[in-house]
Image 1: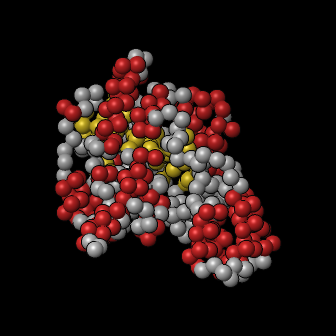
Image 2: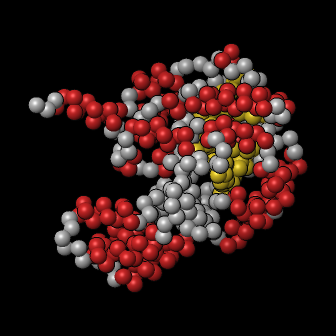
Image 3: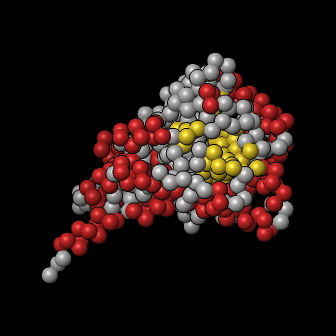
Length: 394
């Protein structure tokens, strides 16, 4: 005899929805306090955020024991502690930072002249200045500056502390101009870039997995007093399991707005945090500070498939079959599309393929489904796929 109660309990344990978000549970998690006694290598705790001295880290990094000790402390801090670490004087060569800033401003000027680069995930298009794929653009434009900048030991150590070796760095430059409005609170890539309906299709263990696939960071390219709007954070909020649903709920947004912390940063400082930490860029209330930050997103080497597959060729081969598949029902067609076509929006070229109108660009699967709904001819789909592929290339 089936135990319907046990079946329901298990199903509710594995699948989450916005109904799992309880404000009281969230409050209990974020009410914790960061004790510096638990993080003896930190220089200070400010507003529940751990502060590390860049010079001390660089000295310790020359010894393997000291290096691992720092990395172990950061790993636990970002996983089960406050979720965020700040490095003062992370970049000791400020001349290099200034020269990289000049290269970034040159890229922004080029975007303005060509009227490109207006897409953004969480800000009104055109309100600020964003350079997508600043990593590759800087490397190709100024390889010597790139080497000096990304030769930074702290970036390497904190990336390994969270992701191990083989990680992949990407960067997006963000300049919040005077008067630039604050972002809404959010979580970041991966699940932070998907709708509540989409993430409800992922089991609980995937919600736990998503934050450990990427590391978020930012390097300050100018002094950032609080009035210039440095990022708002809510320490410990990464520990709230249904948080990818929660940040969209009005009561959680209201709580964040009332309880977030905000730290000033100096040029050459850096911050790294668990991507599940509730955060938002602040309002630039100044009249003269262009708040420039190089946003770093570091991805795990494990977030890759084992085989290289040409899914565009597969899509074109599969489409005529599915278009005339009278023997397949809608679910079978959907399953075949999922097996054959690319189902994720990323990686892409966000200059050509910006997330306008949503958090992520169209996937190959969505394009194929659209073609089937609208009964496109094969050559129409082929042209659309070629354009789709072009938009995803640098």
